[in-house]
Length: 299
Image (tube, rainbow, N blue to C red):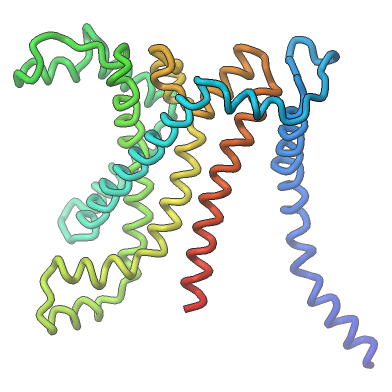
């Protein structure tokens, strides 16, 4: 009887691992293997059109990247790219979520419409905003001309000083619905009793927002920000469609630079080293997030 009981206990204890095994195997195939292959490429002088002559170079690709002027331009652009886009997406998403959390007769329709930018493919987003910024036919120039802010059409995507900001605006528009939906879900979990108690204590709407709303959704917002940092840092499709990284290197980001070195220059080894450096930066951000969450749980 004891043996049967022990066997049943062992079976119950191992059952969750059995259910997890298929997911772990798929993860190993689609994530772990490509990561290991990328690490292998980064240590070799691997040229796509001449793979048989690849040779081990150790950390030379990383050393070359650190002395590559374009790498530092792309790194700075990536920092501006991620910081600007995620900050504006969060701000717009928070405002939209607060508005959509109010009661009005067409709230259901508004909640559905706000998803549209997020649902559109990135290529469509890129083509649409390229037309918006078009020098001759773009509505952006037309609006600015009509209200008198400019006296002549401006080549927004052809000027190094404005190209990156214009693409960032397109990404802000595309991605803010993610924050809207996420924060809206968080707002609906805040107990109404907290607002009632704050109102009884004489707290204004602003103080209720600062002392009730924000603390209640802080964890959800932090997770959403982390996800958006990772996604935005790795995005390159809209840039590729709108400018291809130009003019010059004005809209080069690290993932785009790695992509161009891999598929234009066929330098898979160097591109792999760039990808791993970006991955290391993102892992550092994830580590900071995990430390913060762990600290919150320990309090």
